Every structure is written in C-alpha cells, then in structure tokens.
Length: 468
Image (cartoon, rainbow, N blue to C red; front, side, top):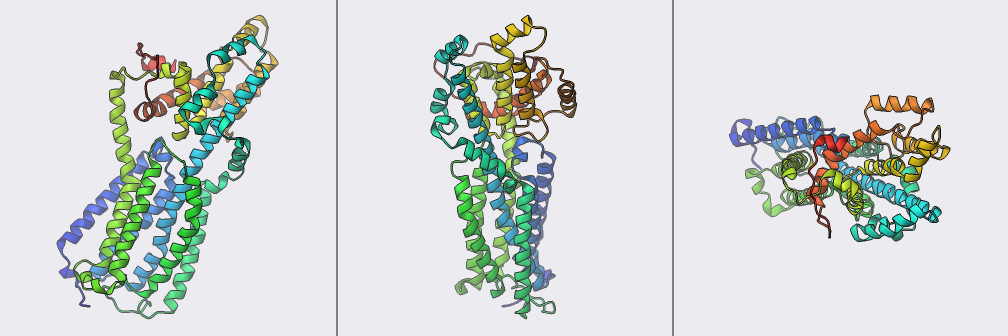
C-alpha cells in the first residue's frame, strides 16, 4: 500500500479536526458547568467524563495517526486496545446506574404506599379515616395511572427494597469505576502479551499508515465482545421496564446502536480484502473517528439540547391555562398521585414523599386538636417528627432530600435539644417545594400531564404562592 506524507494531507482533515475539537471542548465545558442540573447529575458524571476523555484520545489517534504518520504503530495499538473497552464499558456502567436510580425510586414509592395502606388498616375504625377511604383510595388511582407503582401488583416490595439497599454500592460511580479499572488492567496485560508476539507493533517498528488493521487488534475485539455478551444480559435484565424523564435510556440505546453500526463499518474496511483499496482514499480510522464523534455528541451534546428545549417550553407554560398550577397538583388527590408516579422517572421521589408525609402530619384534624388542648406535643407526634427527620433529613438517610446546609444545621439543633413543634420542618418544606416546582413539575406538565374528568383550572399562582 502506498504511503501518505503529512504534506499531502488535505486541509479538510485539519479543518474537520478543528471543528471536532471545538465541539468536544464546548459541549464538555457546558456539560460540566451544568453538572448540578438534575438532567446532568442523573447521567453518571464521572463515568461520562471517563468515556469523554477516552473517546477524545482515541478519535485523535484514529483521524490523525494514520494520516500524519507522526504516531508509531505501537501507540495506536495501545490506544485502541485500552481506550475502546473503556468507552464500551462506560456505556454499560451508565445503563446500570440509570436502572438503579429508577428502581430505587420505584421501591421507595411502593414502600411508602404500603406503609400508608397498613396505617389505614390499623386505624380504619377511626371515623376520620373511614370518611377519607370513602372519598379516595390511592392504590385504586395508581392502578389506572401506573401499575408499577401499585403495591397490589407486587408482593415482594420489602425484599426488592432490601436487596437494593444492601447492594446499592454496586451501582455507585466509585464501584463502577473500580470495575472499569480492573477490566482496563486486564486489557493492559493482554496488550503487553500481544506486543511481545509481534514485530509490526514493537517499539522499534517503522512508521506507516496502516496501523489500525493488523491481527493484533483481533484479541481486543474478541475479548471486548465477550465482556459485552457477559454484561449484556445483566444490563438487559435491569434496564427492562425502566423509563426516565430525561431520556437517558433512549440516549444510551442510541449510543449502543451508533457503536454497533460504526464498529461493523470499521471492521469491514479494516479486514475485508475487496475494500482494501478504498483505505487509501478513506483511511479506516475515519470510520472510527466519525463513530466516536457521534457518541460524544449523544453523551454530552444531546443532554444540553434537551435542557435548553425544556427551559424554552417551560417559559410558555404559565400562559397555558389548560395545565393546572403547581398548588393545584399538590392539592388534587388524583393529580398528586400522578405527580408522585412521575417523580419516580424524575429520580426525585424523595421530595414528593417528604411533602406528603409532613403535610399529613400538619393537616390531620386530630393532631391539630391535641396541639391546642395540651401544653406540649403528644409523644405520638414527637415520634412521627423524629421518624420524618431520620427518614428524610438526616445526612445519608434512606430518603434524604436536598436541603441547604443552614437548614440542616437548624433542624439538627432542634432535634438534639428535643425542641419539637408541628412547624419545625417548614423551612425544609419550602425548599423541597421549590425544587419540585423548578424541576419536577415543569417536566411533569410537558411529558405526562393529561386532563382528568371533572377537573378545571381557574386559579393562577405566583412563585410567592408556590413556596409560601
């Protein structure tokens, strides 16, 4: 095969690489800038950045290495052998992570629903409880909204929730990164062995422009395929039935399809003899470069576009009175149950559960009577306040909501001093309502809301009404 000098490289290659470099740097910068946005935070930021770095170096090698002949073949071998599995395994890790977020949120909603139903059974002799049961039964509504959230459809709620809690470390970024590091170390050992068995990719081998199509890459592709076949069924098992408000699953499916198509094209041009002559006009690395560019834009660019589109749509919502206001959703029993079901997909179910539980405590008529007729809060109410704190507010608690440090410290002092009152979590409630309004509520209206029979919105609310 004839060789290509650096001077003979079309300027379009450098122009293309400059555009690629600009797009990668800009999307990566803004992806990091908005890392605290729920739509970015739910995408496994650390794993995403590992994939981004690996993709950047590998795509550079794919495009410029064979064309410029500045890179020895052993460099392309090492980059292809190490970085390709990292990119593939990073995608697998993100699949597992989003699956865990969804299933954890779903188990929390089911567990809280089961607790409420058991509580109703326990106090069903109460006249107040009986009246409420005649008007509204959450589980019946949930059966028509989202069967997955109904406790009547699943008898293994506690077992599922217990397993997720005990093995949650498996789906954390730190553990997944360790697994990724272990598999990368295995590929390092395998690449060392391969390099010892070949002369074309030795440290002293001469420069050439066909470094991406030797037999030395076949073990990498075979082992990488085996890893995918082993991890694939696990991913399929956990991703089945998972939906999310940020289209993360759809994006990952698009990444998998893009990777598969790109890999097939790459292998055809690298190892099928009838197309060998094409490689001088279109080097085989170009197909890998195009594939990696598309993967990057799906991982970093598309989420930014979705955030922008969501923000633009949300600006028009207040003008559309076909939608309910935020307070109307919170007050209407059916709409609130639908809102809770959506919060599972939004990975923010802790907020809706905290709001529901605290408001039930604040608005129960019998509690209000006792609060006025006794000098202090009854032990039952103090115990419930303590339970809410341990469940939703305590750092690293099972259902911890996101509160400001100042609010946390104030509540901690009151709990320590046993300074209980029915309004002791009001500041936390305000912050949680603001989070629900700014993020979950707007996505709920855009993606899930459908009018219900007999419902009509007649009231406008300001931001002050929402958080007051």
